[in-house]
Length: 425
Image (cartoon, rainbow, N blue to C red; front, side):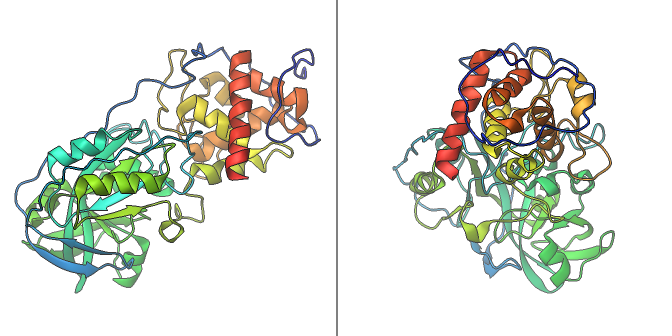
């Protein structure tokens, strides 16, 4: 197989070590140019954040401690609407969900759960003392650099004689806000759509819950719900999810919590801005704080940052910062993972023909899924390595050029890689 052309030169960033050339390589189909605008990179139009609709009814529930140790109050009394509305600032580069979560896994081709085309890593969780008004949710959505906002019903219920904090969600839209390992579990979201409940692993263990069994859940009413499974939810203090219908029946407080995604902004600034909008009596959490970090389950990483770092180890000499830069340019770390105008797909925007030769089953589930970052990111590392990226210098430049045949693209990726190195290393 021909090696990358040595006649192409350019700037070099990330690793520049003398890693060994890769061994046996599969036939390399020449990827098509992806026809991207150098001014806009790989971004496609983004969908604005939308709050879930209000539910009818609600009960007063006391402040309770969940099995995760989080403490929230969900009350039915309304608070005065403060006039302040902060605006977070914007430092580059876009953060690769360093401690957030999310996973653009295109599963569920039929049934009650829609395919997941994008990821929305939560940066901030705000829990109110009562329903958060639609006006406040709209104000949060309009804050600078806020990309997505979703509001959910919630409260405290009794399960197995213990009080547990619960959110009522739409499984098709909410799965993208959960850790990658959980978002991948289609059976959880199909079960939730069928009015089963999902719990965190801690709750499943402490309450001795068994999948497929019915349990009475005590709220305003006491429906018997079947446990649909468990998985890390990535939301401190929240140990249970139910469907919107089940939440309505049990009288959970409508729009009591808001999740906010604001890539590339200091989460602390977002917390302050959201806090100003919501006013006193609201608990606003920075989900990037170390105490709130969560694993994606199964011993696997829950963040794009970790996935980039892990994938880079498969190619000696390749810096994870190059993968992160490509991930940002191609899909903004999975936030725009749908099909491009040229037919590229997934968080790393592979052409299907290239994916057939370089796709990786990174999570060991028996298939190489172009839409799954557990597979796509190590696939990108494999493709870059096969083109000499681990050798650094001109070979790195040529390897990135093979990813997308444009010098502006290579320069953008390598400059972003330098920014990641400066920011995280």
